[in-house]
Amino acid sequence: MSETEPMPRRRRGRPPADSEPIATREEILDLALEAFADLGYHAASIRELTRRLNVSHGLFHAKFGSKMALWKAAVDHGMRRLVQQLDVAAYSDRMHATPEERLREVFVSLLLGLDQAPAVLRLMNYEGLQQSDRLEYIYERYMTIGSFQGDVIIDEGVKAGVFRDVSRPTIFFLLAHGGGAVFSLRALASKLGLPQARSKKAARARAEEVADTLIRGILVDRR
Image 1 (spheres, helix red, strand yellow):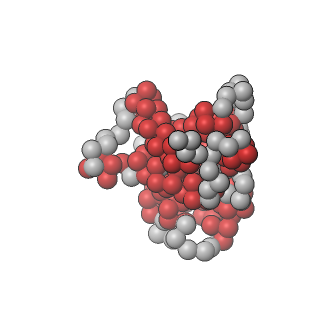
Image 2 (cartoon, helix red, strand yellow; image 1 turned 60 degrees about the vertical axis):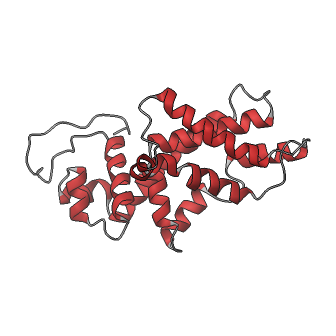
Image 3 (tube, rainbow, N blue to C red; image 1 turned 30 degrees about the vertical axis):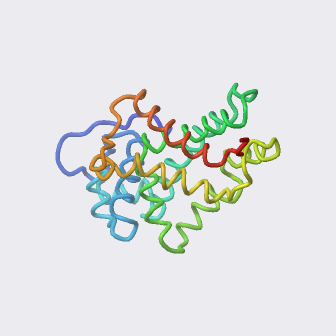
């Protein structure tokens, strides 16, 4: 079955072991990502996961095999979608733009991706607290040094005398876990006067504000 092929509908009530979930695989993985982000891996019991995914215990094991297999599938689903957005931003027809313009587009793309799927960052906040096989899985597949598309653009800007030679991991943390918090910690952001953007235009304007603030901090002072 493809990742976007709808699964058959079923009647209300607890699903029988041989029934199919009511959602697409993509929707199932979105729900799983939310569950792991909300509860953390250890607190996300099989019982709670089957409840949130609306599948039977038997079907859960038939489709995913184990909780760890579901966790990996959900992480891959969220991270690959984000990486694809960044690739589009980094390697679009803006290749002839300045390093500052290209970096701005990558930063904005990452922030908008987190606005659309804030569970990715919430899960990373949980998994980043301590060393584990799960953190190693995420790091090796998606976060090895130099894998962030913005790093290449910063390198080009440093050579061109546009950007200061700053720590790349520091920039990533400030962008994703600093600026990204504006989109992922929605309750706190609202308390501080930044309610969730209700339109794509408003979300982009907020992402551009964060990106511009960060980029101004690494520009070479030409005064």
